[in-house]
Length: 166
Image (cartoon, rainbow, N blue to C red):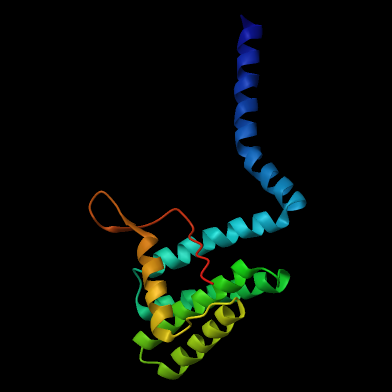
């Protein structure tokens, strides 16, 4: 009976140890074998918090959060300059920031951000990079990223969105 009890306790401790260590070990393995995938998954999580959460923030809070997001995207873009997905995401983030700055009455900064957005998206082959079209596209993407909960309140979606718009 004592042996069964000891084996049971050891089994439970092994399961708990594995439960705690498995995520850390898997991240370490993924980072060492596929760093691009790990970085991409972190960026997708970051995007979800920025895009979905920003919809319910004031324009000033949105501006600050989007500025930090753009900086993170630009760092990732430096490490992977051939990534069209990152370049597209930087362009769309600039559009979002432009919209927030326009809402704050900062027209000069909004125009600068829209210019950077056009530059990124034109380099990808986008044909319609008018301010109206880009703002409308971002509004549509943001509305698709937002779901409602059981009470009808907006709740962030748990899925990253990627649109290829040549």
